[in-house]
Image (cartoon, rainbow, N blue to C red; front, top):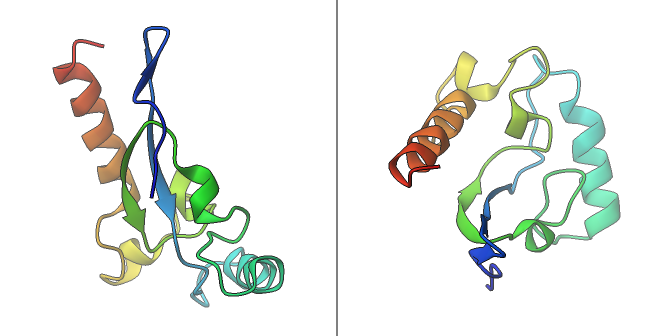
Length: 107
């Protein structure tokens, strides 16, 4: 699947995608995102708000079993990874890796 140009006019683009709307009883946003993802995308991979194929920008860093709010460590940092090992990687670690990637690129 195409990701698009990694750099345009001196600006570097990176992205990662959520590909899950499965839910936990501990996260109040999961049920609505699961329902919306199921109704709006008819079996296409999505994060509850966006189809995964629309989130590919620049260098695509991967797909994670996360919904749209989990991708930014919401609600209140309540992610599956904080309760039991569901995620491949916890959300804060994804951001730490990106910060290290940008630093090593001199950005």
